[in-house]
Amino acid sequence: MEIIKKIGDLNNVKRSKPLALIPTMGNLHQGHLSLLKKAKTLNLATLVTIFVNPLQFGPKEDLETYPRSLDQDMEKLIEEDCDYLFLPKKKELFEGIKYLKAPLSDQLCGQNRPGHFDGVVTIVHRFLELIKPEFCLFGQKDFQQQLVIKNHLENENLPTKLILGPTVRDKNGLALSSRNNYLTNKEQEEAAQIFKCLKIISETIAINKSNGGEDFLIKNLDACKKLKNQLQKKGFDVDYLEIVNANTLKKITVSDSEILIAIAANFKGVRLIDNIYLELPFS
Ligand code: PAJ
Figure 1 (tube, rainbow, N blue to C red):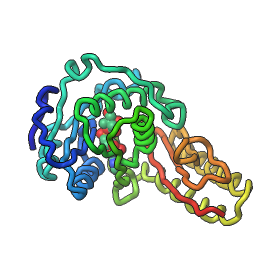
Figure 2: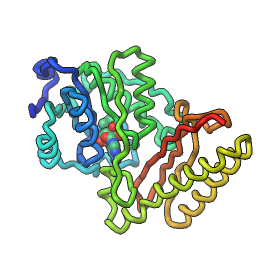
Figure 3: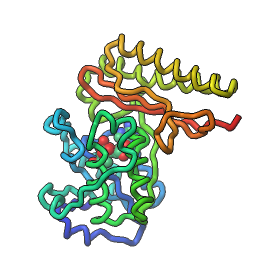
Figure 4: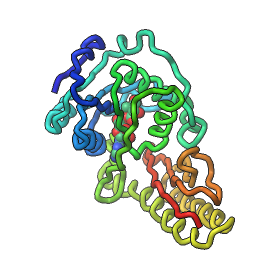
């Protein structure tokens, strides 16, 4: 694996194979590595970035304490046969950076994290313009993030294609996340309830869909409200638990077929997000 620290050295990246960019903030786990593995199986050259992006953290968020574990990350990347690791310096990366507005940033996570997706799109755009990869890989766990980037690529007519990787979970169902490190093992077991709620809702949708009509919507929204209350009682501070159109992230209507059940909740001071994507047959 070649480690690149200076922007100018990105010119050394060999372009004999199409290149896949995998942006990360480090503290790598199997979720991140699954994206690398996916790029490898597609026979792409791989470039992982590790950069804890200050632009996407709010003033009261965990920028200072965000877990950093560069030595272990490098070992994992070497083991997975990553081709390039880009470790930019903040100063050089931010020289002449264009601050961008993210599409779809009024919905879901955007509502309680103002500026978060602007920060994400600004840094990802910077990587895209410096690296010019043929592909970039993002995880479904951060569904809104990948949709923001997908829309940005389309709006700006950028040639990079986005590849989505499935959410990697712990045995108990909890989506892997660097922030899970803030929780004890017992708390992680309890946190897995958010995925259980998503599964219950997806099963309810499957049952109610066969009934069709407005009734279908009301029943599903009732299920969300009930589960949200149950989670609140168990110590989760639920930011949202919603069923939305998976392309617009707006509340579902009866005619939507691609839908997303999405949740964000704070548990023991840790922000957890998760989602289930469903494609419904037209009734
Ligand atoms: P980070 O949280 O490090 O995640 C990097 C990539 O790994 C994202 O595409 C994310 O969706 C994916 N990922 C994280 N957990 C996953 C899991 N359990 N299963 C599958 N994929 C998972 O997302 C960011 O960093 C930043 O916002 C970034 C895009 C790097 C911009 O700063």
